[in-house]
Length: 359
Image (cartoon, rainbow, N blue to C red; front, side, top):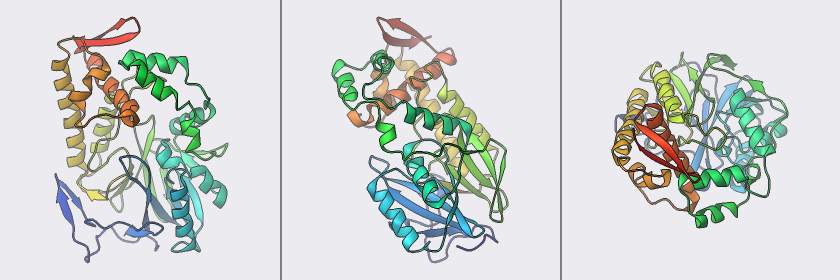
């Protein structure tokens, strides 16, 4: 990859496509497994397959002098490891990773960060909130699901069968798909400038999807590496969890949308999932509108007391199976909690089960 010396311009050989106010400069083009696709001067795109409905995660390689800084590393799976080995045997055979930047703690983004840091003797760069959360989840791995988690599931309206099914998985799933992280890290915070090669990237922190999610903004060339804070076709999961049951993650999400909206509308956005696009403000407005419309529908639905589990039909457009039950529950709780913060709902605890009704 060459040093960035010009603003982003799409390849004329590719046909741009548009959808809901967004433009996808590369159409349907994407990097093949084990390959790197240049999306802008000095920026390479690696796409790794992951299990589940998202199907893939995007990783970004930024020219950094004699090597490349890696933004997100993928999940700890055999397929992802093999893909990276192909990358470093092929297009990046003579390139070393200078640092590994994690946008947030989710295992599809930092699952191989420790492995990559160890192999290249590269430092890990993250916000403190994301690094500490990852370290906590790795350290808390145990065989038996904590009683607090079972009580949380029951409070959300889960049946005993659902609780038993989830409990059978144990409590070490995170550690299994994350390689050991370095003992130390380099902290980044909102507003910091991160010099990578010849480019200054400003850190823009969002919240709601994760505690302290880092986006990287190159003002000079009009590029935003957005991680999961802005996705082109789906809204990231915004969940209320057992570790902070009285938080307001959806309120934090709305505040993060407002913060990102202060950036220019025409940025070239590199998301954690989906395809690179332009149309940042259109996407932010759509995500904000979608969640607020769901809140309004939910407020009407709570004319009669409901559990979080009862709200799935108002929030999701598909059936929720066992594999998605935890995420769906967290998202439902985030919405009813937001209504409570706004004064539009109240919660009542009946024998360990939370019932929500319109306020």
